[in-house]
Image (tube, rainbow, N blue to C red; front, top):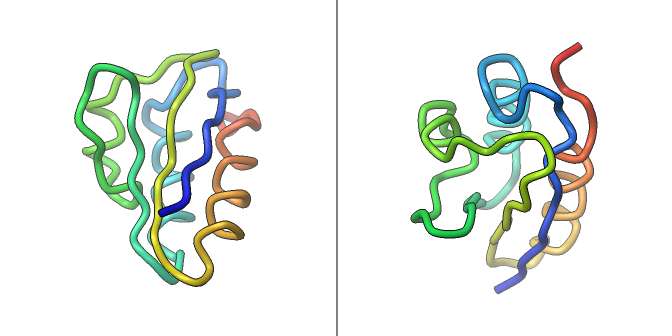
Length: 88
């Protein structure tokens, strides 16, 4: 199982537009990915509603997890996305 920690780069956190952009990218991944914040259960990274329930804000650390042959590459790509400003 592979994990990556990313820092939320969007100034509005993972709400509305940034969450939708991330969920779309995660749902295109060739394997299931989960997203978690400390103190809450992980959610499917491709689930817009699940992502929004995490309440992740700008600067929060989130953990991405996946299992499979391409997990390292997928998590690297998704972590880089989370660290950008997605609310533009």
